[in-house]
Image (cartoon, rainbow, N blue to C red; front, top):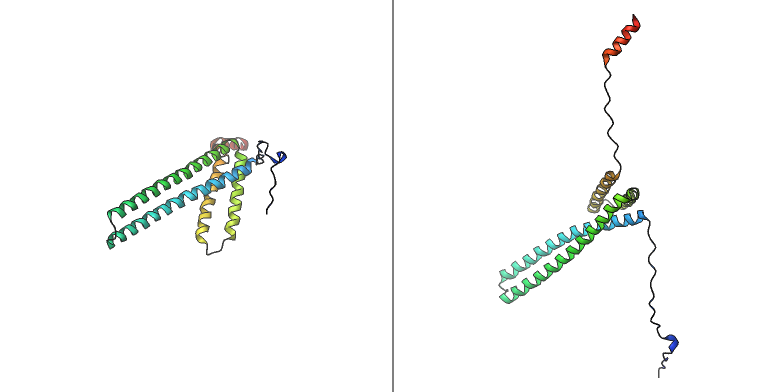
Length: 191
């Protein structure tokens, strides 16, 4: 027979809630770099989502056409398929809206950092670019698709750095020295 421990008063919960300490604050540069990485991943996820959704639509239409061609489709079956497709479409719209919301939130946060912490943002962009270049160098020649994606990200991030770096004011135009006064001065000295 198993013995049970009695729940004595000292083992009972006191009702106190334990609070986990907050995560240590990151330095601004690390926070911006993580935000840039997350923004870029969300942007890629949105593009991938659109491609997958289009592929699913084409597959659904092919299957529907095949079913109609074989004569296996009844009105009941078509109504069921339409309902499933409509529900999947609504769910996909919700998922895309969530991805877009998070993308906009991250992009606006990065823009805030660009305005308030320009130097840290440039440093963060440089960190991300360095990491991407290291990833690019590790890829084999057969991974050209990934290389193209990384190359496109590098171009985009480098453009962001260029936009953040202060532009020098244009140099004032140089005045052309009048040649006539110089000749006169030379002529006076010769006489």
